[in-house]
Length: 82
Image 1 (cartoon, rainbow, N blue to C red):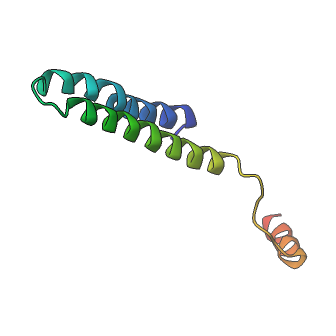
Image 2: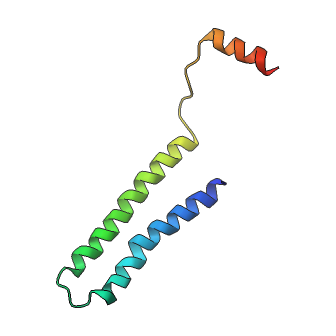
Image 3: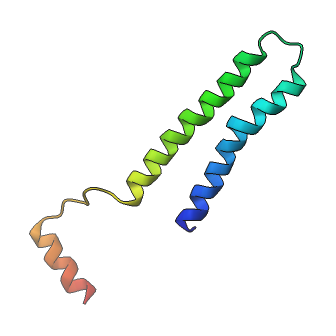
């Protein structure tokens, strides 16, 4: 999958969990005294999970360092790939 598509799909999912579900909860639990707790729980869950996912995804997308290979392995790979 393309990178912008994956980021868009996951962003849309966590936006739904963090923005749409708390609004829907307002209408479904209008008499509950714990309504605010559930709304904040959904918002914090969405924010924390999204930040965790985005950090892990972006770190894998452009790593700071690659695998540590010995000189012999690099030469072997050069010979095999020619």
